[in-house]
Every structure is written in structure tokens, then in C-alpha cells.
Image 1: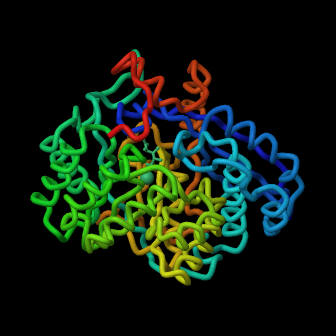
Image 2: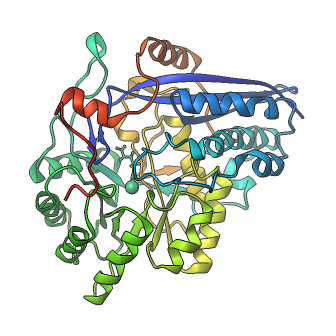
Length: 433
Ligand code: GKR
Ligand code: MG
């Protein structure tokens, strides 16, 4: 079997004005759909980050993929997919999906997912069963809460509202969480922080704990907005609230900064795990993070970590080191949802519910046949279907591609959006507090 065609479809997906320390999300998130066909008529699909950088990386890998046997992935990984370790691959200054140092790795990940989809369809097995079988039958996800302005994304005649409205206070965040838990059944909660004064974010976590109780583990992720001092203060203030399955995610920038926060919290007898997707972005970062005790929970991602199999490898490596594993997310559609669900289910060490932005995307913008992937009690059940278990709705892909073609931007730039819609003088300052 050989890959006989390779096509990429850039798409624009309505995205609400949610905030993080990177700035503000634009009215449309950019994604890319990859479709591979084989000479014996099997189609494999994948989803990747969007915009010019991702498309260029996919175009660059295309000649190596055309004519390739989809079962033979190692050579492509060794010759092309391995991340660039020569400079800053962290997400300190660049949002995930925009760092050119992992562009090739991300392109490889999309090809790997589509090849696994093909292999699964060829042998009649779900992807997770090709990779050693399931560590669990369903992938648990967390309620991923964001401070946000009113609105549900889109622009002009296409602008929409969402059910969450403006959420810029502890009370409105509790409401957002209640809505998400009622709708999707999540059992763990993650708050995107680094947006409001740390004292307000501390109060938000406390309000969530009062409302939902200790049965719902809590985490907060300010994407490096805090100094070491402030991180220690937050860790101390939320000692109880972040215990019992919670964690403090990327409170401050750099591996050294994280290690210092850990050391100072431990010196006060506070053992809250520190998690990271900013300082640790590939397999080569894991041992340094472990050796310096900078990170106790590594946040994987089947997109920029180089595919589902690398998430599984990471899970084994972390298991050997005694480090936890969870999963990071960016805006995504149903194809990525299933890639993430399969990655979680083949990774025995994934003991925390994974992140997902999926609830922030509306039903109207789904590209898979039959509509959106469903959550059952907060988890995605692996369907009893071959490959990733989904097919594309090409009318929807066409509609979102047409929308992409009309957009004036070709990369994610949250700082520019922040200046455009919220504060003309806004800059990303680290640490901000
Ligand atoms: O979507 O604004 C966002 C997030 O801040 C995202 O870009 C982060 O990469 O969710 C991510 C995280 O956990 O750091
Ligand atoms: Mg994070």
C-alpha cells in the first residue's frame, strides 16, 4: 500500500473572545485538515494547527509522504519529524503552534495520525488497538475555564453569542463552570489564569472549591504570568485547593524559575505538583525537568509532541521517572478531539483528565460527519470503528475553508487582538505580577 494523494484544507473556526496571558483569542481560530489517500482506496485524516507556518511545514513534508508506505513511520520521524533542539522551543513567548522549531514535528504528527487512521481502516481496528490496546476505554477531559468577554466568536454578519457571556469575576467563572459541568459532565476543573490580578484568580479558585467541593480536582494555569515570588504566594494561598489531584501549571517562566518555585514551596512543606506545557515541549525536555524537579506533571500534546505514539512514549518515560502526565490543548475540531482521545487511551500513565478547548467551538463549525464528538460523563468513549473512528463532512470543510480564504490574518496573534479589542497599549510582559 502506498500514499497516492496528500491534500490540505486550511479552515477558520469561530472562537469566542477568551483571554490568557498571551492576550485575546481572535474571532476565528485557524486549523488545518490533512487528507491522505492510498493507492488501494483508503482515506486517512488528521487535524493540525493552522495558518501559514503549519501549511508551509505540511507542504514541505508532502514529497516525502507521497509514495510512502503508511506502515513505515520510523524513517519519516528520524529524517524529518524530530524537533529542533538548537534554540528556544518553549512556549514562553510564542503560542503553541507558532514556534517554527517544532513546525516539522507538528507536520509529522499530522501525517502519523492520518497514517494510523489508514492502518486502522486497513486492518479493521481502532487506532488505540493498533498501539498495544487500551489503558482505558474512554478519555476523561476537564472543564477548561477561561476569563472572557461577551460573545461567541465570528465577525460581522457571522458574529455569534455563546451561552457563557462575559466572565471576568469569580462569580461568573463559577457560573461558567456550572454550565460546562452540567452540559458535559466533567469531573476535573482547569482555570486559565494570568489574566486578572492574582488575588482575584486566587479568589476564583476558592469560589470554585466552595461551589464544587474537593471531589473536583482544580488546577490553574497563568502561562508564566507570575514572578517566582508571586507563584510561591499563589501556591501557598491555594495549598488546600490545589491538593488532591490538582496542580499549579506554568506559574512562572523557564525551567529554572519553575525549579525555584518548587524548591521554595517544598521548603514550606507544600507539595503541590507543578505542571508544564510551556517549559517542557518535547521528549528531550523531560529528563532535565525531572533532574531539576522543575516539573512533576508533563503536559503532552499529540500535535506538537510528534504524534500519538510520542504521547505513549512520554507516558512510559514519565512512568519510569515517577513523573505525572496530562494533556495540553489548543482550539480544535473533532478530528483533533479523536486524535487526543486515542492518545490518552493508549497512555497508561495519563492519570489526570486532559485539557480540551472543544466546548469553545460551536456545533455549526464541526467538520466531522454526524456532528460533534460527544462527552459521556466528561469523557470521550473510543467508538467501535476502525482508525480514528470518524469521517469528514466535506461540505463543512469547504464552508470553513472558504471562510479561511476571506480572512486577512494567517497566524495566531493574541497580543494584536488584545490591542485591537481591549487595550491599544497592551504588551505581553513576563512576569506581569
Ligand atoms: O488557548 O489561550 C489559549 C491557551 O492559553 C493555550 O494557548 C495554551 O497553550 O491552553 C494552553 C495551555 O495550557 O497553556
Ligand atoms: Mg498550559
